[in-house]
Length: 554
Image (cartoon, rainbow, N blue to C red):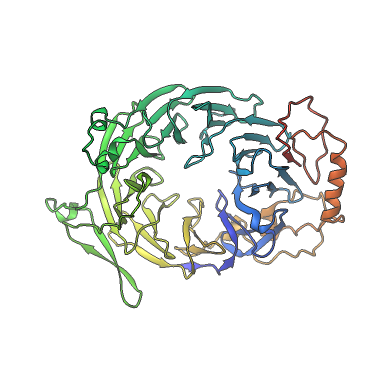
């Protein structure tokens, strides 16, 4: 295993293509973008947002743009043209502070305010579409873009809104100027929304005590089926224990398999239900037993159980234990809420052949299930509670276990070996994630804390990483630069094929003054301007403006 040097950086995030890593330079409002296989080499961009105000960084799906989000300002970098900057200013904050800003297309940005207003911005034309009353107090974003859109059609955005105490499901084609292409009322208080990977189905999951708790809709927004998690006869049994009702109060989480053939439902009593996605009938129920016993099977047919042990020297190893076995029980919190009970996590492998799960009663135990046989494939017992499970992005056999200790435990499902712990040598509360590289590139793991990160290469660095845009020498910022000779590309700069452009003659303060002078000549309606190279276009006509809305895009 190889690893990069430790690099200081805040809000570290990898691009969707996996080739770039963006982070904020500590002590300075600058954004740095490094190559995954050469993170010590980077390109810097100045940010208009103070470090203390930055909330996070968001990439566009094609990795060509990066949004820097704060509660009052969104700054968008165009990596294909480093001279182009786009800014969205929240003004006096009459609509509240920004809650999120996400790309829902290459040239489309969705902003959501804390009080429920949402707006889709076209970064080329400056036009926007208002989406009022968006739900913001949900565990997950109350919107999602439909995957695998039909050829020639714009992406479709599905969003939950709530007005007058009722939920509404709105369908909006991204790029159209209509407020909503389709809207329908949805019963209950819905918390999550998720498209199937093939884009054919949409699932809405409600609050724990909502009835019905789960709704299935078609791609065009028509209701197909609902599920009720309640049993009326049990609700009227006053002597029944609360923990015995946990499986009857709804669905905790909904997860689609990557091949869109199975919908997995986790419940509050530790059970999982697998449904087929043709009729949404039941395929199987999976339960996490407190005792694992396959003694009646031949040894070669038993699911292997590996338990981690830590020596006094700190060395970690795994031993295979025999059936029957009782996984250690986790300590119960004094004030344990409903969301802390039942299935803690479930993740499908990249091709949907395996399902990894955790139970809140046994948080150091990981179950791996075979979807084909609907049986346990392996059980892994960690020394401490597991924080997160990560399947490899392209290899369905590889699972990474993150216990928050700065150690990546990597397990190959089909191999007859125990998990392999990889030490990161990174102090602090470390978060792990696979960098989404393509299958023809060696895998890489991003290990980050609040202020530092490093990249791990479990199979070594890619020998051919130069062809993917990595550079060998630092960019000479003083080299000659001919404006307009070719298109500015971040990848060309990282590869050393193009020097960084010099700073413009006018200072930043002077440029802002010039922008303010230009703004005085035009209406203050919310619209978009290209700060550095675009020209203001003619007014789009009379637009009715919310008196509390003085947000601007420049």
